[in-house]
Image 1 (tube, protein in one colour):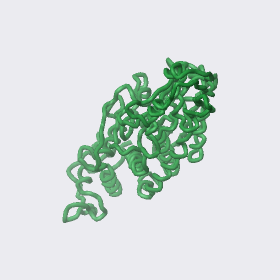
Image 2 (tube, protein in one colour):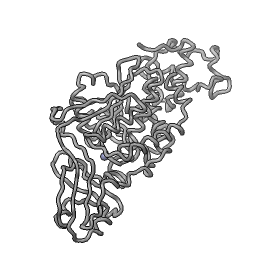
Image 3 (tube, helix red, strand yellow):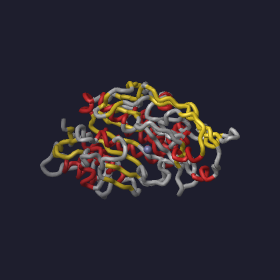
Image 4 (spheres, helix red, strand yellow):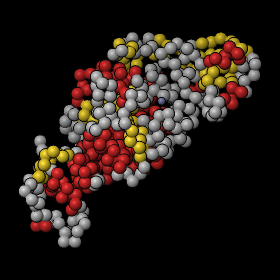
Length: 437
Ligand code: ZN
């Protein structure tokens, strides 16, 4: 079974339910760029794919960065003088500024206020804040909650540890016919945030699961890393391997109702860029293509000038472009199976192009071969008896001069890749086309 068979036979609705379910299972975990929440996320991912976990000690130098101390948290709260938890980490892990240092003291509202973060224009949402590289502490709460806090003596407790430990990442390598690799990368360091984090993790997991069950031309490497420091660490520890990466995708924000967005690689015209854009152009839906810029997700590191890898980023609504971004409203209602399904199917379509995109040589280049005598041409035009488009065959024959891949032929002829692939298969079967090796 290859990827075309898989795309034909896979029950996408069922897959989308499983993807959503997995995101829902991971949702409550308090993740961060290091620590047990990240490990627990990877260990739950292992119930679907045999991820290998790597631990990189705090203090390890990774290019210009240093692997930070490991952060763990058991509990956090602000109690009023009656002993009621007015801010409670147990209700939402977003209530604590991620990477807060431990604190346990009593203080007035006035002393507490500089440590409280809200969204005044979204008074019912809790913001998501981090303090990775600066020792500090704080709480996030709804603006409504803040307005309801009277003058009082508050007991403030963050029961966290920030100590030498490890940065953890997960990797799943699927060998193919060739050592040439497709890299799939997603960040897994955000706590209870669904679209920005879990949608990418869950889709990557189920892509890996499906790809593991079919014959593959390419090798695939799936990595689950903390954003920024994780890709920097991975690149630093795998520098000798990056030459194998021929195509790559960062997956994020794939479960919201917005249109698909593709952020191109720094090079801008690589095969992965063309493959994704081809899929989006033929999806029948609106989409957006954006040029590379050095901000966003881990494509920033893969596309840094010292690597300049062919890695783009597939999203629906991009980070920072939806109101719910980095707030408690990026929750399990914000992502939906129908959108996860669409994103998942698009990823499979992209992989299908990569798997099948070869360059062929027309074996009868002097004038058109006579298709009719081979049963490839019908008197009444359109498609031949085998369901292969005649125009697709003519284009494929004409451009198979060793200079054009099937994807280039599809784009130049305005045909869908799958139609060009079908035409190529029919021509190969009739000895009119041979793979250029
Ligand atoms: Zn984020």
